[in-house]
Image 1 (cartoon, rainbow, N blue to C red):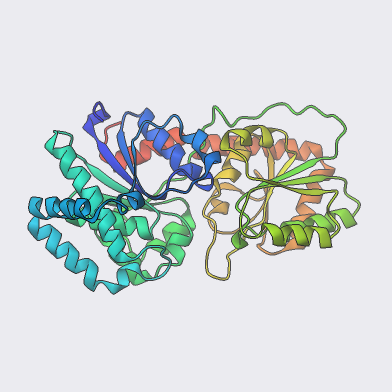
Image 2 (tube, rainbow, N blue to C red):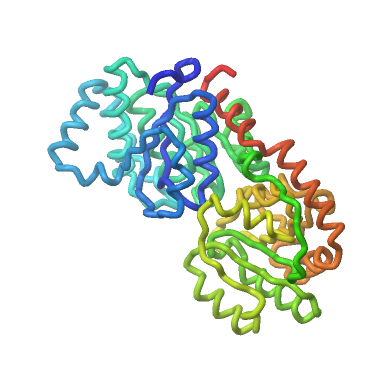
Length: 418
């Protein structure tokens, strides 16, 4: 893994790789690799999402699945622990004690026990030890998400002394107790997040020198406007996202019913998969929207460009879910705007970082179905306004959400020269 700019080599710890709903991580990895950083990916689990695989084909970084490592013979795992123990006895024993006694370490949102996180971290540490013995020093451990990956990253840092940083996003941030977050961030060389709301939430826990706002970047060469050709079809509304509570798709369907009742002619296509699919199909049918709204299922990331380019309006209606889960800045929103699509979206989480009402899109309060419907109706009735907002949306993404700029910011945090 040699040849990185300034010799910087970074281990990325993620919950699962690759995920169709986490293409922003793949974009980040690709951006850093283009800058010459040398990355290794440690994934806590395999998501088994074939549709996501194509997007990560260009990634050069090797991927190690930590859950698969736990299926190896116990003797193999014991030798791994022994090697890490012998290489740094004090670190290993103090970190084991820290993990066993720190019941708060895995409090809140978590899918893995802290002891399993310790075992994962030993795997990371042993790989780092082996690489160092071959003259390939690991310079940084970076965890994506503040829940289990951050704990693995923190424990691996304690085992090895390698600097550790993390990126906090949404549920992983708001569903973890402040005391647990404070422990996970205290030893981090950098704490990164994707929107101002998250940064404000973290500010009491992380000093300003280590807290960094880095917006998710969009590949502006791929996601770009295409001239619309009118074919007489009804205007097309497009929405993309996981079919989960926080995305607010029932509100979108209710807004579509209001538009239909108001005599507006349109089509609506929802792309995505999730546990609410059957519920949403039932609601759509009860509202009598079978001929207007279709749930299209998930699509590979590469197909989103054409979907956005053919849309007249992109619409998202998220809100803060009952369990505190919420969006940061949805990547699909930035990608749609990069394609020059007029957007209607609710003002929740980090969305106001990207969308400014009446300047580059239309904002509605979360759960306000009436306002959502009125904003969409306005755009359905005024094609000129759609074009104006779409052009402003593209300009906004160019100015502040370029994947190349985001990669440069992260590379700097990892100590790589620019």
